[in-house]
Image 1 (cartoon, one colour):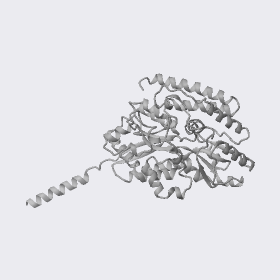
Image 2 (image 1 turned 180 degrees about the horizontal axis):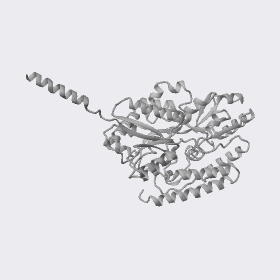
Image 3 (image 1 turned 120 degrees about the horizontal axis):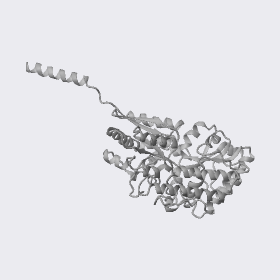
Image 4 (image 1 turned 180 degrees about the vertical axis):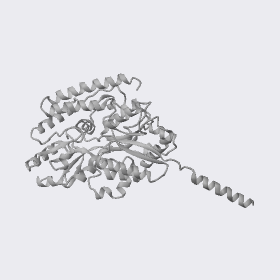
Length: 440
């Protein structure tokens, strides 16, 4: 009888457990700005993580470009419908740091959730951009890029240029652009992200300050200094080359990329992170080089700075979601995941281990030139002029700089006048941001 009773109890318990609802999967929204091939790689990352466990589901949501994505997050926060994770580009760092009540610093998140996180494992050129003055990492490094030089080897051959020798200096680039034009190319070279490449990274690569106070990393009371002689000379030369389309301005952001992909321009300055799209769309042999430099600038070449974006965690989400975010970040930190992201996109490997793994796998040997971005960003130890930028309202400042560059390229202003105006407009925005954030 006792055995029968125990058996009945066991049967009842088993039935009750079977009838109990399964623990609901916790969904974690991740708002991002990756489209095209990069968007597909983001979707793959989420699916790969989701397949490793059953408690959480990362849900990537494309919200437009970087500005549109962060703007959507800000409006959503006001209505308490914000995501747990939002992708913010590097120039939004000062703004996100100022929004202390809205963000959950990554170093706190990983500590609170007891997930392994080692900031020292990341490349210094990346960690320095996203840490506070005490060295605490505030956001999670995700898609770090740096501008490099791409060139069309087929057009080089047609112009009688060595397809294995990209230009190293600006004078060399000008001479090669002339050869390309003479051979029938619609333009010698063009550039995406005009300010990021030809002002911000130009300054870093020549070890010239773009702003005081260590480019803003040392305080919000920084002031722009881009109207210096080296910068004026560079913009004046681009303007001169514009007249004969040795250089051909193609617009802001990524509007120049299709011109290179279609074979209109033989040389292109663009993000290392656009390699995936270039290789998918170009019908020619693609070559890679470092950014050019002016050889008479004594400290050049120095090292380039990063661009791209990080993942910021927003507060006021259910507690369970933060456990999922921490696990996802731990997943993204794994060397094999980092290495695959780097190899599939062209973004930098964020950790030393991912770089070493990529090298040991023979990726750089099989794909000559793909190591240029890492070589360039680690060319020399960063200085206070080449570590990074942290300037308030920098999205608006970059718009002002590009307004003035366009005026110079169109012949409406001299290079000096344009850069003087960019400094004046930019400094007004910096002072407004400083007044709005007196405790920062």
